[in-house]
Every structure is written in C-alpha cells, then in structure tokens.
Length: 407
Image 1 (cartoon, rainbow, N blue to C red):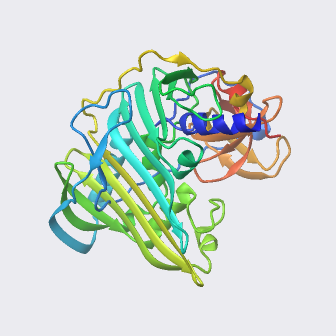
Image 2: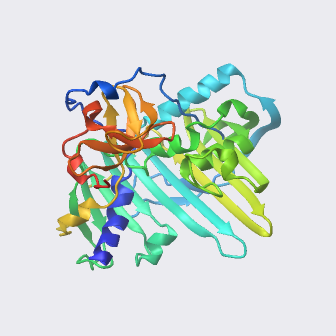
C-alpha cells in the first residue's frame, strides 16, 4: 500500500494541486460564532516582472492527444536595449493590468521549468511542465527528474476534459502497463486549484514581488511580436523564490532576510517580457549564490504563447478505466476555501492563540481539517497558516471529504 500511495501522489497531486484559477462555489456558510468574527482588512495583491531570452517555443499546429509539441525558440531579436531606466507609475499599472489579463486567459500554450544545482552535484530538474489549455480542456506533460526516476521516462502525460482525468500509460506500480490512455476519475467541480496552469504559475512569480523596483531594459522580438522587457534585481528575485519555496533556506513564514542570512549572492536577475498582444509572454528568474565554499544555482523560466489563440485539446479515444484504491484519495492535495466572513486564524482549533485574520472574500489554501470537519488548517495570501472555523468558510461539499485529516 505504501508504494500505491506514492503512485497516486505522483499521478494526482500534480493534477489536483493545479488548475489555473480558484474554482470555489457559493455553498452556504453555517451560522457564525461571534468570537471568530473580525473586521475585514484590505486584500493582499500580487505582482509580475520581465523576461530575457526564451529556450522553448510553440508549433504552429494545435496539439492533439499525445505529448504537447514544443520546438526550440530562436534567440530573441533585440530591437532596442537600454538599462537603468526606472518604470513610470503608468507603466507599472500597465504591467499589473496585463498580468491579470494573462492570468485569466482560457486558451494558451505554456512551458515552465525549474533547474537547481549545488556544486559539485549535477543539476536537478525540479519541474519541467508543458501545458496546452483550451477552455475547459487541458493537456499537461510533466518531465521532472522525480517523474523520470519514478519509472516514467516519457513523463506524466495527462488530459483533463470537462473535469475527467485521463492518464497515458504505462504507469509503474499499477495495472496501467500498456501505452494507451486510461480514465482515472473526475475532479470536483470547485475548490481545486491546478497549480501547473497559467494563473497560479504567474501568481507565484509576481505575488508580493516589488514590481515597482523594475527598470525598463529595452525592446525585443519574441514569438513574432514586439515586446517590452523589464529587469529586476535582488529584491524581486528573493520575493519570487520565496513564493515558490526555492530560497536557500525555505520558509515563507520567516522574514526573507532571516532565510538568506550568511548567503552571498553572485547573481540575481529577474526578467519579465510584456508583448504587443497585451500579454505576459515570459518571466525568468536566475540566482547564483554561495555559502562558504558551496555554490548554488537556481533558474526558473515561464514562457507563454498563443494566448487567446485557436488552440484545441483533443479528447483521448478508446480510454480504459483504471481502478485506484479509494483510500488513495486521502493523500495531500491543494484545495481552496472562500472566506464568507472575516475571522481569526488560530495556532490550534477552538482556543489556540490568534496568529492572523482572514478577510471576507479572500481565497485560502486548505492544508488539512479536524476529524469532525469543524476546523480547517488554511493559509492566507500573507503567508500565514492557521486553523479557522468552517462556519466562517465556504467549501464545496465534494471537496471536504478529500481534505486530509491533520488534527
């Protein structure tokens, strides 16, 4: 059973932990305990940045059922280069507007890759995702080092069509030993965030990132478009890495300054590319640092194209049902809850110390629940994790039984 649990984590978590945007329904909240109410505070906001040379680019044809196709991207053509020019308030407003527009796109192609190395070890591919989105259909391919080590040299290949999950075999440690498509279930209609899609991917690289520190770096030609390029330094890089959990000493609940104490930074580059189609096409983050004689390198590249284009995702034909033990659905998965009424987030359920508040209208990440589902362990947009009464929250009824019990 231990091996089978690990298998579902590999198959379903990259899925259920990821589908751009928050899909929370309006399920009625229960009566409110007055001691958990609080005055709403302004909602936290998120932010983006610039991007240099891309390493991957799209094909001209829409991807069908198997492996989304990507081709090497030619080096961007620099139309005009200038550095050290602070962006204006009007340009910052435009960057934010375009970020939100791109996050909301329903049709696009995207690649996202994170590489990390610590000398003298070889680089590790922490993530290597390819996504094609077409309205309510998604095609996702994961070629990370962990995926390859788990016995899938071709990567994890998944389609989501109207919420139905299809996985391409063969899959190790399962009955799916043939190179064909298997149907493994259906997602709940709400309360799930698929983190591999454009909305969450952009948010991770822009939320709480000081985009006002960006400087105009010139103009380039990318994906057949004329694009403005913006560059940031240490402050933007550390904020982005903190969001993604890739700082030298991860821990979003600790001040960034504490996490990087004793670290010498040799290179910190944050680049964002905003193109003439009013969309973010690329964000690239590079960091090289060392502690004593140990050198670490981190490189993150997010590239989007064909945004709001005519992309299609074909429904897999002749799928075979794949039986997975129901118990495996209790594995850790990222869920969301909507705050119906602002209230306290506590260190422990019921009488724990108050750590922070959640504001009405905020969407929270759900980490776990009590056995009776009376309290949820949630994370708010400010990076604080604590217990909150479910009477203050709206949670899709199909999602609640899937949330793991942690108390």
